[in-house]
Length: 212
Image 1 (cartoon, helix red, strand yellow):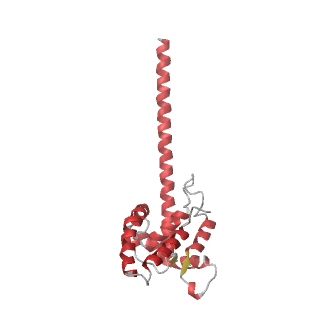
Image 2 (tube, one colour):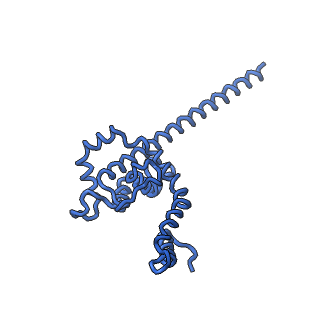
Image 3 (cartoon, one colour):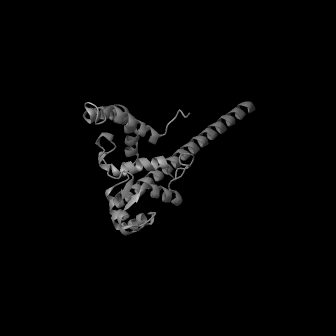
């Protein structure tokens, strides 16, 4: 007998319990469920989610600038073709929109998303990061405040504007990460040289003392 449950199973269990306790046939029903659910989200969900999306917002704060938006407008046709090329099956209904599942497949092929992210690779993002970045570009106006997030009709689907901002955000993150890694390496090399020079001076002083 399994003693664990995945996320989908967890939500199904919550729905079943809620339907049993607060179903239409129970007294109070959904009128009581709504405030209880709101209390649960604010007390238990927001404290866990808020730091994650605040961190993402802070990491990507400088990604979308007026200059970047201007460049994206000039590349609008190219971006539209790129988005369209990611579709598994092109139909009039899917024009201008992209399911994130298809995007993740192509981003992996492009070398943007990798399982090696964070393991000595600063030129890629993980699938988990991609997910949070999707939320970021769809909730840009909320500025990382989960309590200001708006309900999305298709949360795992991006339009062309969101697709563009998503690519820019990933590029911005990987560039900054690479620059930070390079700066850290330079600092470590500087400290190593200073330590070697100090050791050489000390050794030289010791030899002079022996000769005296």
